[in-house]
Amino acid sequence: MNNNYYAVIMAGGVGSRFWPVSTQEYPKQFHDMLGTGESLIQRTFNRINQLIPSDNILIATNKRYEDLVLKQLPKTTQQQLLLEPAMRNTAPCILYAALKIYDQNSEAVMLVAPSDHWIENETEFLNNIKTSFDATEKDDILMTLGIQPDAPNTGYGYIQFEQNSSEIKKVKNFTEKPHFEKAQEFLSSGDYLWNAGIFVWSAKNIIKAFKNHLPEMVDILDDGNNVYNSDFEDDFIKSNYEKCENISIDFGIMERAKNVHVLPVDFGWNDLGTWGSLYNKLEKDNQQNAIVGANTIFRDASGNMVRTQNGKKVIIQGLNDFIVVEKDDVILICPRKDEQDIKQISAAAKDKI
Image (spheres, rainbow, N blue to C red):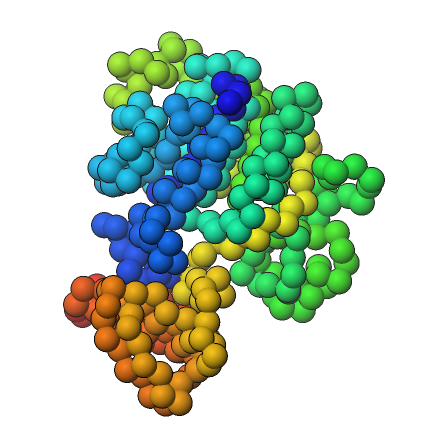
């Protein structure tokens, strides 16, 4: 393995649209959402570890998930955890990681990837990352992976690229989640990709980009005293991290920088952001019902997503296109078409149950 290769797995989210399975105490990345025998973060770590040395994989997460990470990822050590003392979106976290990595290895190139995505073709994914590493070692560019869209999905951001004959394309612009008609236009145009939130760059060049576009954040997190990878790092982060602006890497850097490029990819990607996206990845019975954990009998029922504790007996009659989820003392029954309401439902449930 190449010792200049590093990765940062982003694992601080709550996944509130997967309530009641995903909670603040035990978010979705630590669950085996698809019944594969591995949690999402375990799957992500093991996939990346095929290309990147385990010692070079950092986990960015909230302090409250420290024990969960160390338990589920036995190859990691305390020194590989980036524990955010405050929620400040992705830009401060990525700068923190880049400064820490650069202190270890000034020639480092780094992958930034979410902990909770599903990737079908792992070999193709790793080939795409290797291609991106090669490009960012050679040139001063910031790279993202763009997913070839197969539908006018309104749940993703889009990346427009310049048409040329090269494998890696220069980015024209980023567009936030569009309405359906605009998404149809993007799909028809042929020069738009889904934004997967997977990034590759050299540590030195992303730090340079922060100095150009978010200099105040650099002033806060880079005091020039070599605190990273020292006994003073934890105290320094606890004292300074919350002073950083709450801003995403997309808004803070990617939409402002002029050297952003995208690699169009197609490795069977799903962001597993909702019960519906999970339903799409699971095998179905003849009536298009998807099941995780439950021992289920369906009668005149189709298109349902059912997830319960292993072996729970569930009989469903006359129900179509619903989400049925059981976790501990909570059962959620919700039309699949209303899955975006689950975030609000979970917030309301805290006050009543």
